[in-house]
Length: 147
Picture 1 (cartoon, rainbow, N blue to C red):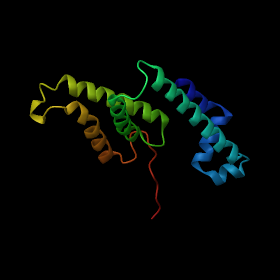
Picture 2: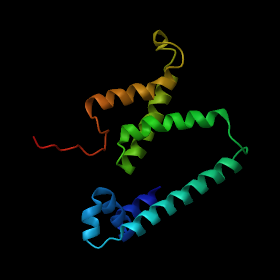
Picture 3: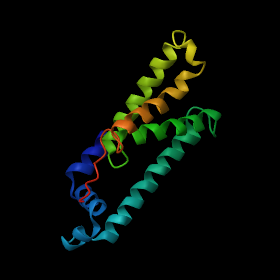
Picture 4: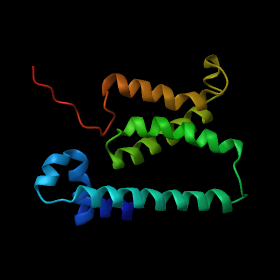
């Protein structure tokens, strides 16, 4: 992940990809070939999907398990917490979700008045609380509107 973030920030490919995502018209006027950027983005996404499929079919037992869907449900609050337009924010959101879930599960006996299974619900509660304060997420860019 660190290599991907560094490549995304400091290589010409990463800069052109960020520029094309931010404002395609301006990026095209600056000489960035949007077709190549789109092709590279889809190629990287396909390669990462292939790596994910490899992990899914090889480690530790091949095939889908019931816990796989729970992991996907936990990725949603992580992405929303960090901000949908920030890769670093998604990492921080994942850490916040993991720590929140671990703390809520660890203190479940003290939080018995909230019911069983509060550890599964806690990341969503934190997500709602953060969205009330910062609607774009922790690292999301604020939308500026002129009136």
